[in-house]
Amino acid sequence: MFVVIVRFPPVAAGREAEFEQWFGRSNALLSQCEGFLARRLLRDEDGHYTGLVEHESRATFAAMHESPQHSEAYALLDGEILEGPRSPRFYDVVVA
Image 1: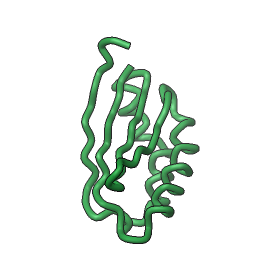
Image 2 (image 1 turned 60 degrees about the vertical axis):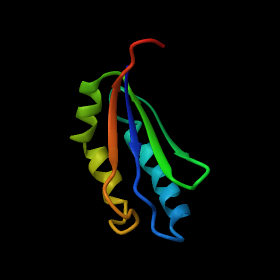
Image 3 (image 1 turned 90 degrees about the vertical axis):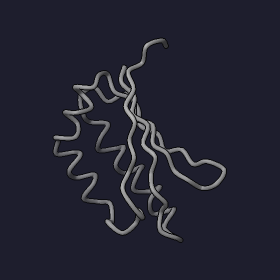
Image 4 (image 1 turned 135 degrees about the vertical axis):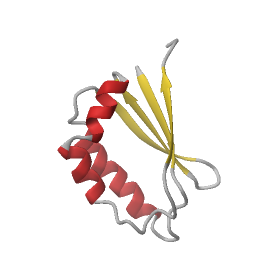
């Protein structure tokens, strides 16, 4: 299994619900990709968002980023909702 943990930059003030709705809509699209296992949005006690993505392999995760579903999902995201770039970290699961 391959896991990506994405730290999102701050969400523009007052647009948190919109961001959360986008994440849910994008899950519906991305879950159609081969190798997709799960994608969750987490919010910590300070209001910062982190995404947790699980895929069968690094290869299926990379293929998802080249898919029409990925293009469609990110076309739905208003470019001004996030105040900076995402910060992903990549992990191979070694013990489950």
